[in-house]
Image (cartoon, rainbow, N blue to C red):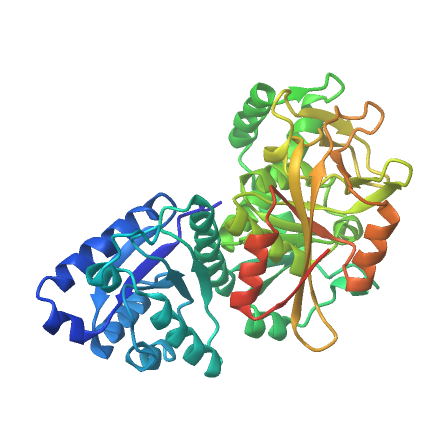
Length: 466
């Protein structure tokens, strides 16, 4: 999959022209100050252009630069008082996400405070002028306040820039749907035009016939090379015969080719379509899991909304997974997270190899496939889903939790993991359903509610934290 890149940023330091004429060295000093501020975000953002803006023409040029350079965000940094009508008119004309960084040079107000201190450290009033007028004109923006060396504030600013990048990624996201969504699973029903116009993902319709034709032309040399890599990378169970393994790899290479041919960022399939088609020897779960590990967004049963949501959460948070709550431990307030087989092996425990096992599929006519058996690296995690709400908007639901430290259960040989709740499990499940959560979920490592809330704000979507 495409690598995750830093957000691409065009920066505009906002001031006012009167300071240029009143203080001969002001522009040079303000430029150095802007450079110092931006040096702190270079570790997590690519700065495409920077400029101290003293007029509406300056702001217009930076705004156009953000568009022509395909920046992910236009970062506004007030450097002094700055009047809103100098900057807001061109800002209202751009579709590039706007993030405002309200920061300053000095961290404290000391006994040596003087007129020069004021000159180089009065930004809050101008920030408030700009934000007030933007809001009155219905223009959404991200916002972070804090000293430019404050690591917590910088981390929040990073989340805003990542959210801006993810918003733009979603606008060009391509999600492949193999077959039709699972009959009567209404919670992930979608309106294709609504998804494209209100969110961004384009749905690419795929057929089992396409996949069958690709598999029929798989290069057996590639199959052998993939088999050798599997034996090196994974702990391969003895009961997997070479032919069972080669069959799963042929399907893997077929799915890989389909993803590549259509430039997909996300993929969903209905396993029943492959069963009913009759041309598939088994299920392509080995390849799907590997692709999840490489960054493909995914959801089962034709849930294209969650597949696309997983792809954008990977952009936002660095890695993502598809899952579902299966069984609840009400005594210990834990939940078993799993699915038929699909799970991201890149998130597996680091202290052991992922085990490949022989799996017999329950449907008549479908042969055994190579599956995976592992559990996830313990630590904080965030569960989230995305759904249309009753008022015609999108809604994110999110909950920060923790993955239990556990070895794979010996008698449950598919990928699985458990989350530990810090409340009665029933209370959480009630709140999740009352909020409208669907039965498919995306999980991401770490505490990511803040980042997702920022993305929701920039997209204009509703947000519920459980």
